[in-house]
Length: 262
Image (cartoon, rainbow, N blue to C red; front, side):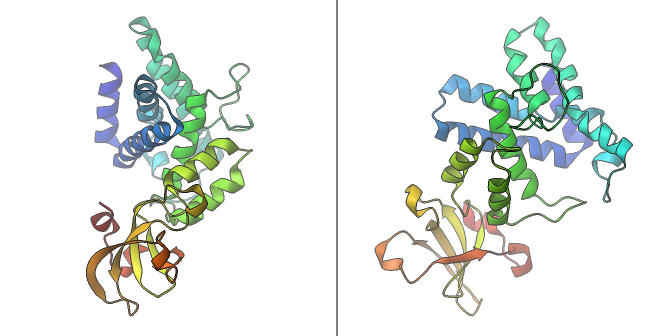
């Protein structure tokens, strides 16, 4: 109940942080399922992800939502949200020792696979498995979400940058597994096809050798004029003439990608 009240407080205080925590929870469960975790492990991973940023309750809003670069003092406050989260969850140990994985995930999700992140720890300098999973999905969601201080990355750009962080900030095996899970062009991505058509990805290709050929829903013709949405499986032999050129910004094209993705 204590941590649920904390989650409710975050919703009232900062909508982005609340939405981010929920998004990370959903992504972590989907990813964990692909990794083969059982039901109990998925439930625990989901809780770890749901509360990973609860420490931001203790970071001033003017720091959380500052549109310009943080000062060293403000960065210290922001960086301490991992410690604040562990302190917030620590009293729950009196009632349930099972909260330990949540405390460690909250404390370590920015520590980095190479241990060079934050906070600087004398002990527990090696991330737990759940912390490594959350680090991957946390970074993906943060990079692909618009903030007051950043424009969101297109999904394929975000995944490319994550590959560059593999072995340093992120676990390289988990990065590879995450890309296999969501595809090179994740569900919900708005993409341009080689024909000039615009489409929204609705399902990744289960074949790891054909991650660049998901199922899409066409939303415009080659002249960028709206069409009756229709599903196209780019993995089918008959669709060899169509390939994805890259992701595009749906907002710039006036497309509600969520409407077509579901």
